[in-house]
Length: 313
Length: 226
Image (cartoon, rainbow over all chains, first blue to last red; front, side, top):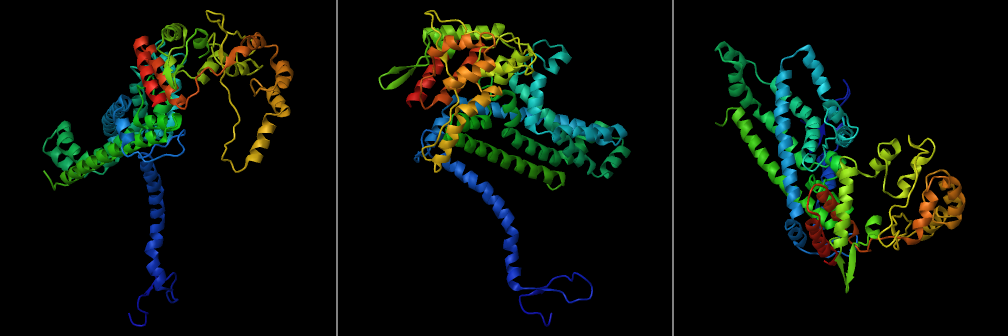
């Protein structure tokens, strides 16, 4: 365009008639960096505590040791040789797997029930998201009151006497139940959105060919729904591995160490026992677990998406 | 810890320049077994997740008949209008040990100043104000402050405010001379007492008391001497 200085461009005209404002070249060159500032700030905000936490895992920092020194892998050796740590790993995995599986199955079932639009379905859709509006820590308090063996509403309603929902044998499953109550709607809504985005043509063609509902569900709906289901599984599994709020409110990791998840273990070591390095080591190991699992689940999701698109058998 | 001490049990004994965990000594095992049996037979359902607020709530609303706890957790409930059982609560020093001991554990909150503080004077002036007789008397009269540490406030405002609570002052006079922090001071206090409470919960849930306390003592020996 003749007449425009090299390296400068015209911005779109804000109004009709007048000449478009000229953007100086230095501003144009600066723009990408300015746009990157918020993302950079957030990244630094994430990376700084992460690097600091990782650093703590390699020193012997505690409230009674104000002059920590580098100890190499000693913290990892100590934590990995502790039976309490492995009990926490087991508890965390049982919690995450059972909560994710049950929420996925229930969420899928609820989504299928709500799939066909109806008046009651629309009401249920709105009611369904109510648990998601409640902070998990508040849900923990509410369920703690309902679980109370002396005046809790659950024992009263079901005539269970003084049944102890948070005893050693029941505590973990009672915590999983609260997780299911809070997060099944999340899975249901995600799957429902996926269901409603499916093309109608394959189902109509199958119906014309005389396929029954179960056949269409197994052969058409489920393969096309896998990517949506896997997204829900990834979100819920990652989140469940990091569970803290409702479990801490309900049991604080007890009775004994029965519900001591890795996050609660890290809290106990850092905040209660004032051994910051051991708490940081717990968190670092949890990060490895979450990272490896997330990478694997994302690769599974990629395969499912390619399969749903017909690119892979 | 109060009754544990009265029964002659200790948390640690000194072994040269090291500490030796004593929560698996015969007296400690015997007392722990009785204490856990008491909690199981006469305590609340869900004892393992029962906390201080639950204790005070249940005593205040009348669903618990007795609480064995620090006085600061109980006397506010007897202030008129503070709970359903206000006016019905009385105090007792608890059973003496076999040798007549009324040893009592002191659980206290204190003001402290960091040696590295850059504003020591304002901090010191604040501590003087907060522990002065005027501020302490006002707090006592409002029913928000337990067990004033100044004798003048205790004998004055405190007795005027709580003196008619049945058994309260008598209990205080009975135990005060043998009251001290009964825990052995050591730098891993929080970690080792947390493990101790986990062991008690395990025993409550059926673990053998001797075996579990042996394991606890081994663990705590490693931690405190490590």
